Length: 193
Image (cartoon, rainbow, N blue to C red):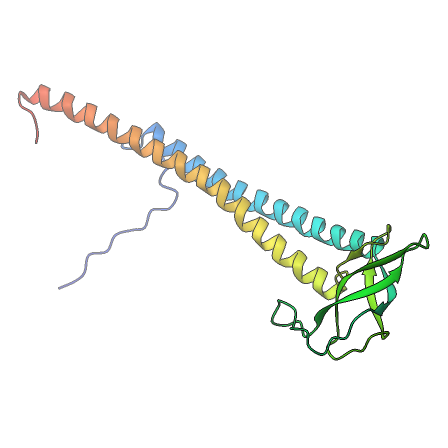
């Protein structure tokens, strides 16, 4: 037996066809506009998010500075910091702020350090402890992940709106078909179904 072949019709919604409805054309335009808007909005959102992350990392680098601090307690019996990849421990340190005032707070320091050891901590402009600024590689990695997430979120939101519009058009189309079948059934003198 020979398998039947049928021609694949491309862009059927825009071609002249007696079975084509206005909702078919509208749906075709919604799909096209949805894809185009999802692509453009996603790319723009990704670029803006990546730029914002890089600017935040640059600002953090400009606002923080490394300060030499003195360890105020031994770290031999301290437990490791909360993160798995961090092999430092929490201990009390003392340092002098840019205005000359002494400060004391807890910071992460290498394990096994003795009282009076010099450690490096990071402070903001007012002399308060802050986290170490991101390196260039870390900033680029965070910018890339932020850009990808923003692209996916924005594109998904735009495509979701287009998908919802298509569902609304399908619902309207089904209501039109039901009304037309009702009309055809009464013209035949009986109802279908």
